[in-house]
Length: 280
Length: 176
Image (cartoon, rainbow over all chains, first blue to last red):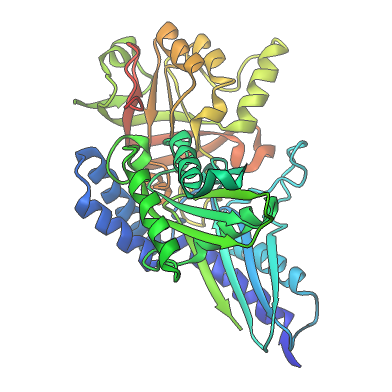
């Protein structure tokens, strides 16, 4: 067995939370720069420029990119020969969130009970997805997920007869309905197949893919291109104020599903796409 | 498309001059409130109490900033999505609030209320919290400190950039 101390995990997570809040990933910044070059609407071009400037200010003056520093979402691949020493892995992740959000002066946005509106005060509990894998590595993907874009996410239980076209129509309609609310330019995560809950989980997980990486399966890569083109043809534009740039990217993932089902989940992410990977 | 350099509180003339699509640089006092503060303000009004902030010609900014880092005026402070306040906002316009600042389109009822009470809606850039924090010169909690990030704050802003999204004539930048 390989032992990884609780403290090592908690500290790595704390640092990841602080870094994510302040440092826009290179692929996202690059996508914003490319979009600004291509954009034809003057106001949209100007807004994209301000988002790039915002990323610079956040990085240089250590001010969070956005005031909504998100819910902490983790996708964890836990190797079969890994053992956490001094506590549970879930506790280590939550302790890391607690420390990172406090140390980084990040906003605590978690209500302990959604109907009673009491803030837990430390941005825990995190949302944690565990995947047991073979090996002696612990890989943790952290995402700070904002509420405004999450609210615009949708799921549908389509029928097999709806097929590929039905999937595209549902995704495009979800983006159209979201309009300017989720802070476009957005990133669209699409989960197709699985079950009701798995579709949503893979829709979120696929957001972890870099914007310049397309799906390895050429059919799904083509689907990503097609949805992106249709979404950008909506004209919603940055902040919903019109333009060519409604989405910076579309990521699709699939899972095997029941012969009666075609679940489709659309997880919408804002341009302030804050992720960090930790490998221990 | 015009650019307006405006100081708060807003006069009726300043509001009337704004058209959807115009740019605004706002200076002066504005008040922050988001979901929980709105709900509480409306509950207090229902109980016959007064609002904890002045209303005539005032501006409400939908924001819940990050905690203020040591030595700074405020934390990251960009707009939150406005439609969530649509259930409450018309009541505040009725009392004299002249502008709200947020992001994303408003409901038909809120748009009607803006025409009726001659108030505008200004869109600030969502996700530009670091940039917008630089326009805030003063920040002080004036009500509901127990709400943490959702407490009502009195901000003094300087040349805070926004775009007129809804004017008093029915102009709406979100209609394509």
